[in-house]
Length: 361
Image 1 (cartoon, rainbow, N blue to C red):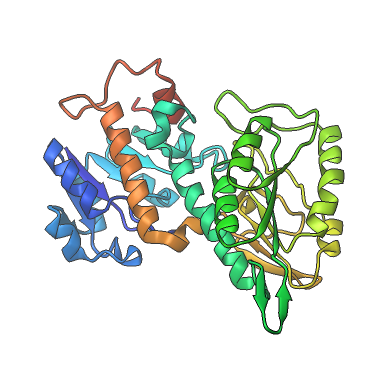
Image 2: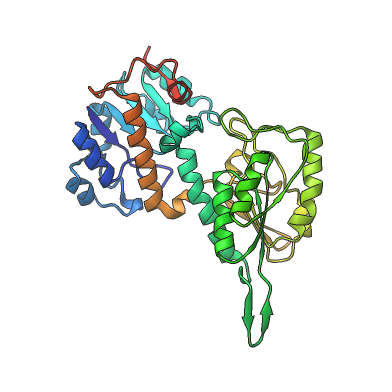
């Protein structure tokens, strides 16, 4: 079986890294990589070749690869070049880009979206959302600290004492918890809120204060936050108004998979924040948790920076590529038999059925 790795059009990451290619070779796969595919991840063609891969053209991958990998989906006009019956593993976001599954199905390929994997114990090693969210939460705090015109930690100097900054995290999932941990390590005072009350202990274990709102619908079966009623959202906003007004940094990480992100931080809340404060919105590609967020842009409103960036994992592209490659490797092991073919006993398996968005006709 030949695995082909495409150069990304819309992302800095690369689908496989040399250390994972070596493991795939040992299992019997051959790997071909599009020339300069790893350049933005600081991986040279020679590094791939030293790991046992062959460097080739994009056209060669379409023609020869039995399995193709990219972090972001191919352009629509390239899907028609995929070999019928091939396996395509990517991060399709088919719950946002709803036409992609139809196009892949029409082409007659196996398509597996690693962002659709359920959040269960057995699936953790394949869950791309968790691996990328962890990086995003970490980098969100560092990005905010860079923009904030003051210290995060308390400082006592001969010229006077500086109070620690206050960080408020909305959403205590993987990204939110990493943001809490990072902000605490940098010396900030951290508060957090989440509709899933079971996250309270996790927030407290990292040194954060948990703001509890009664009456929340609890997490979905797959561990994602549930869409809340308007009454609950109103209660949540009232509780958070003071917290946001007193915060120097707000990290927004509240998403509901398959739907628009809930708007939690209103214009009015932003206008009560101190000048120089920072909001990092990790839900920007789903509409954003802040009313004023614009995806892939930094907006300044009333002297508050509002950064819309749902792909902050690119800010640690070397580690992000490695984690994604590990997700791919673990997933391939799960869905393949000893002959490196798709397992036929997984048609009722939750991981398989959730992530498979297209099958050959």
